[in-house]
Image (cartoon, rainbow, N blue to C red; front, top):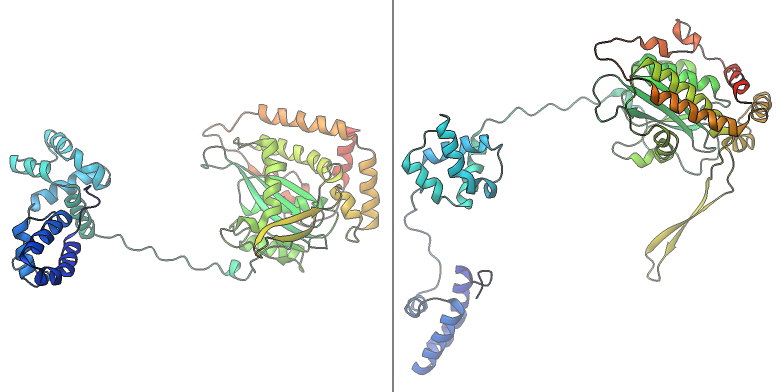
Length: 431
């Protein structure tokens, strides 16, 4: 019989209680045969089984408790060894108790006596585990950190997601892409990205750091070239979006703006901008670190070209219907999705009434005079220039205000004016 099949004490007593009536009523030869069977099943001695059958087979509490096999010196040694081995589990610690204790004794960290060494050689994994648990209970506990007070700014903003079938342009999902490389220390560049759910229109702006100055400048830059009004902004719960400065800025810039936010730890609430973070930012820049003023300026020149390329020439598909498909038992098997004909975001925008006719004609002229193939080449030339720029020099301080290349953003006047002069001058380069 294997160790796993061995009966416990309670199982033996239960078995013997069931066999006792048969044993009492049986004849002498039958009792001998029953005893043979019970010996085979319980693996107990014959005399032991007879003694148990003569009693009531109820387990009685121990009359005298056993003394401790290991004293306080073993507990002290385990405490030192556990701290030395970074509080690993008993299964890993027990085989190394003797070796570690001898090593600590050589360096004067532990008083290792012959009696203690013998006990460390004999102690089992279970005894080590029990003592480590008791030692952890005796250690003073750190005070429990007080919960952070709820941010009143976030509490006032409703949570949820923008519906995928939103019929009106102007509902933007917002996110910030970090370009920190393998380390998030120090200041580095972020990409602010806005994606319109209805048309797929995208805006990107590079900022150095996440201060309210650069974030406000980025939002103003996106507003300055956005050809239709913003109705709703839907970021995540980051403090770079929800602070007194930006809330005041949005209240002054667009008083009727609707602010909403995604639920904490639900990235799919911003599923459109998360997907574009991959295809419109990471696909170009990867996961390298960018952290200088020159890189910020070069990245914004790249985003100017990408603004024209992706909004006017790159077609996008929009989800039209979602049909649940069920099995014969009525359970949901999959969701069938159908998409409309691919169109550029500008064409989708022109099919709505959100854009002013004058701005539509101006943007139409801008697209007509732009060579898309040359624009594509310029994008990758700018990428090569960006990756050739050196990273930040340790100890050298740079002025982030040099990245605010919109003239009205460097002074105190923060007014936003819709102008396409910058885009018009861009088209002169790529015709």
